[in-house]
Every structure is written in structure tokens, then in C-alpha cells.
Amino acid sequence: MNLNQVTLPVSNMAECVQFYLALGFTQIVATPHYARFKCPEGDATFSLSLQEGEVCNGAVIYFECEHLDEWVSSLVEKGFNFEQMPTDERYLWREAVLKDPSGNKIKLYWAGENRLSPPWKVNITA
Image (tube, rainbow, N blue to C red; front, side):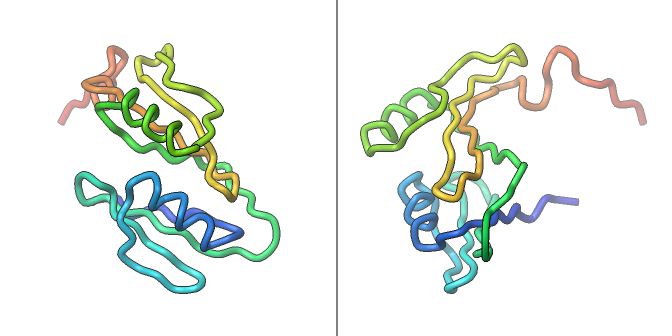
């Protein structure tokens, strides 16, 4: 099994499309009510779905980048506002936090080996 995608609700499609394009994603589907993007590395995709009324989303979307600090610096230069600049977290990930124009929480991070093998990893037995 493989995760296909995550869809985020948005209140303004055009504004959010521009936000994700500026982050470096490639748009692969475009309709007035739906947009889908491919991540710059790998095969992962995510999409946006236009919602009427207030957007309420409790999900946090994580995008991984080995050169996190440089990426965040380049985004700040482009005018992105971060709620948290890159910070070493207690769970051994380095994270920066921002929100898209619809208020969806986005974490840009680097975890290295700790993404799949943290010190507290569960031992899997067959």
C-alpha cells in the first residue's frame, strides 16, 4: 500500500495555487475548484479543494527538505512569513512552520535518519 495524496481545503484557489507554486511545487491539475501538485523530489502529490465558507482543517502537512535552513531563508527573501523559523525539536526533527493563505498549517522539516528510525522506534517482528 502507498499513500496517494492529501487534499487540503482552501477558501481562495487562485491565492493558494500561487502560494504553493512559490514554494516550489509543480501544478499538474487545474480546475476552478481543484488543483493538484507534484513535490519537487520523489513522486508524492497533494491537492487543494475549494470549500465554501470557513475552512477548518486540523491536519498539519509536512514537506521534507535536507537543506531546510537555506530553503526557509530563500522563502523569507520572497516574502513568506513564518510562525517558527527552523528549530531543533525534542523529537529530533528540525522544523519551520508557516500557514498557507487559507490557514492550513505547513511544516517544512528535515529529520534525516530520525524520520523512519528514531531512537524510540518500535521493533517490528515478523
